Length: 255
Image (cartoon, rainbow, N blue to C red; front, side):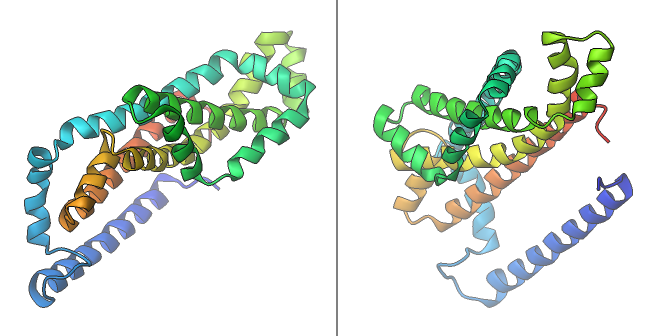
């Protein structure tokens, strides 16, 4: 059941209150009570680390690389499926077994594909973008195929009664019916891609957030590792907010 704006505000307030309590406990314990340890750094040290990430780790350039690859690959996958959605719809209607066979690849662990692709093509930025685009396209294709096989017959019959056939029927019924589901899956893909790209960059010591993580780990820089996690979490949250905004513009009929 969709949440109304009032319930969303309550949830947001509860989350902010929870985060504030966690922050208060963290500052109290690790800044004033507990000694320096290997679990969490002092809050003051964490704050000092933030500007150091940009000067010592060249974070701005590395952040630009990773975020560009993640969101460009999502855009490539979405527009590819949008352009060829009619062909995919026809293909799945004639060969449902193909869809079931392709779904088997979703059972493989995420890091398997990152390691395999890095082994094949190395750690260049172009190879990283190709890898992310391939994963994104495959994920969105499977998501579309899954919903395209379950369009209610009454929707299709209503479209035909209005004289829609072929591509017009697909454009106005099948594709629009699938959009809410696709955007729900985009949130999963969004997080999935972040994990895969970080793994890909980490194991290849390449440019990007993953490469910075690799370097910070080699220096035993706990503060940098924690601060990177906070920055990435904020970027993922911002990305989800952008996806929600685009969904509201494109899927304006969604309840």
